[in-house]
Length: 305
Image (cartoon, rainbow, N blue to C red; front, side, top):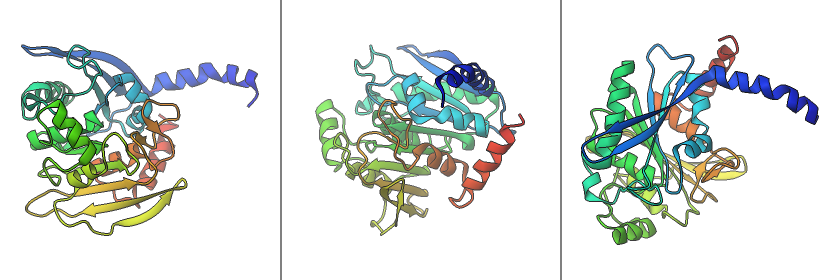
């Protein structure tokens, strides 16, 4: 594209972006500390809107994670609220969620503070518990797993990308061991519908952690296919009396990064498969063959909004 045309089009792109929704900042507090968060409210809200709480990884800010996942664009298209809490540097100098601290592994601590944000937004916008979803990367994914175990009646489903199972560690040393080996913590999704993404070349959090989070039964063959020159295998775990339904994506040649994320984004790999779209499809309950049709229809309708 000619550089002068890029300059001409820039104001129109900015105007279109402003028309899709509004970013705002919020803060929640308890007796011990406070938690800042970003909120994206689309111009168009669905009749029964959803709320997705997105938890960043270590060395990330909420804004960086929002860009990396491109989830705000999907929020504008589907008409759901997007909330990104941000860990305080005083709580962790690397902005990691402290998932390994026993104080944060139940309904109190950081888990309780994140849920306080969820409660405030869900009440304000009249969002049912079944329409609240939590997803995260790395430490954020590990915290999402905790929330799924601790608050099964207040969340509809969770997404764990490159995370560690709940209860895998109670100390920093134990956390490092769990990340390297994947041999500890709760096994299977438990009571919460769960979608898991993990790269087989992840050298920060071993993919055995993803195996452990997803499976409460013997590992099946799954379905193998290629997306954008990358091979992956997708497993569908049916619910039974011991665990809820789960879906697991094991992605070859993917390191410690959000699969299908924005090019140049923090801890994002643009090759795919697109974790944001697949997680949203799973959360909203669409079969994989139907979601592209829904996506195309919503994209068409957005032109006339």
